[in-house]
Image (tube, rainbow, N blue to C red; front, side, top):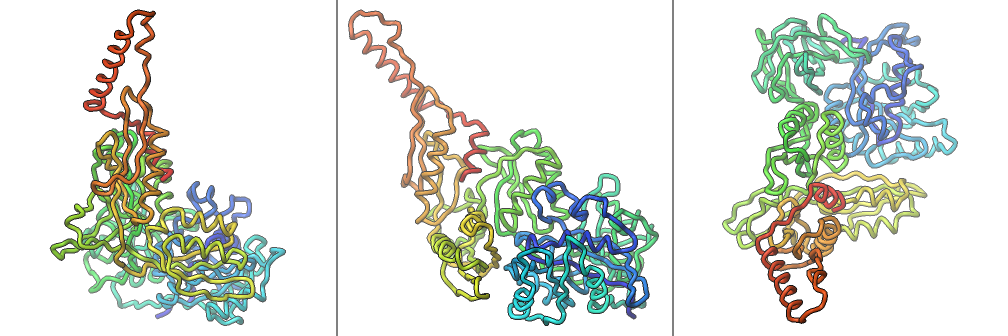
Amino acid sequence: MVNNNIRNFCIIAHIDHGKSTLSDRIIEASTNEKIRNAQDQILDSMDLERERGITIKLNAIQLNFFSKKKNANYIFHLIDTPGHVDFTYEVSRSLAACEGALLIVDAAQGVQAQTISNLYLAIENNLAIIPVINKIDLPNANIEKTKQEIHDILGLNIDDIVCVSAKTGQNIDLLLEKVIDVIPPPTINLHNKLQALIFDSYYDPYLGVVCYVRIKNGQLKKRQKMLIMSSKKYFIATNVGVKTPKIIETSELNDGTVGWVATGIKSIKDVSVGDTITCFDDPCGQALTGYKKLLPMVFCGFFPIDNTKYEDLKAAVEKISLSDSSFVYEYETSQTLGFGLRCGFLGLLHMDIIQERISREYNIDLIVSAPTVKIKVKLTDKTIIEIDNPALLPDRTKISEIQEPFVKVSIFTPDEYLGGLLELCQNKRGKYIDLITVDNNRKQIIYKIPLIEIVYNFFDTLKSISKGYATMEYELLGYETSKLVKVDILLNGKKVDALSFICHQDSAYSQASKICCSLKENIPRHQFEIPIQATIGSKIIARETIKALYKNVLAKCYGGDVSRKKKLLKQQKEGKKKLKAIGSVEVPLNVFIKVLNNK
């Protein structure tokens, strides 16, 4: 059976191509919600999203639309998705709950790196795709050229393209009619048992875990006893409903629809995104296939500045991880920074967003250790271990070889910035793969680059060189053997584990020297001289010295024999030598913050 009046679709695009603004216009065009006097980007619910101008969290709403062409009412389930490469996992979750997708392309910028990546994700999920050219009202919009790019690069039919302006609302009704014609309605089977796909969730202190679900088959009713299939946990659906974008409670969610269900579950670990909800009394035989599981690529340590907030940090991370399945963590302890968490992210922006959310939503200030990647270490006894923390790297005598992850980086850039970006890739140990001519003014650069080189300011440098015009997208290729070394930082001969890092041996000296200089500038002077050393094994590769505070012990001598002055100077020298041997270096926490942020 087919429910002909329902359409489930999402909006996918490269970052800043107008997804959220288009969502606003679609909401306005529906009959159940008018937001002309409301704030823009209504689906960007977090202040952080509005400040940065990016979508971080997917958002699913139900809309009612009257089609003049069909003379009938339709129910739209719209999901707005992020565009940055770090949030690809959000897009993959949206696609699992839809039958179609609007692929947005900026009329002034054309096809970009993430446009292609999102198209491939949609094709893998067998979705109907409607290509949309947005921002046609801009003075520099080149509609015909963009149409040709969509046809040549993406392989989509020019006749299927819809040209709109999300800012002015031009052709929005035409786009929604196209949605009805092109995107198929959900296929349902009345005889099948309940199957509901969890594609997002969050924690509510009163309702417990609230899940956003797509009902694939059956009906999910209020007060019904449900079962989560992988965790084998059951719950009573205390509340169910839809978002329009207001939260509305209903008595049931029917097959083919998208809505939310309050589980009352207080343990966050019992609910996983991608899992299947079914009826406890009459369960289905097989769970639904979820979305593509993406593994974290960048790791760092989170340590609370105030150690009394460690338990609060654990609770905050648990709640955030509930709605962010690609964010993983485990507990760790640092001799220098105390108790903390080792966290994994999809990229530096992902890491920055999580850190900012913890600071804003839970009022916890953090010290963040230097980001690193997961490496594979082959030991002399032929065993292979995976390391994401420099402190866990075995002794060099036990290591046979070290492998690091490589990624294929695709960069779209105007011709005038080509030379600078080629040089950037070469300086990051990149291996040239291909150079493709996109059109008369743009090129696509393809390089194989170690992931560890990408996580250190690569994206910021790329935007700086290209003045913001270049875009990038990367995918993991695999692991290759590299000459990686662990660099330890010593203060007065004692190792500081929080500052240890793993890098390629060719860049070890420059990075170590930078950290030593930063420590020298920020650590306050003591009564004794403090050597700052960077070592690889037992070899010192960089050194700085913090001079001792000078006290004029001769100030009280007003003449007299010179031997008395020599005696006082000798006593001072012996005292400083003794202090250096038994004294401890006190490093304020703000020093770690400054050094790690500038690394």
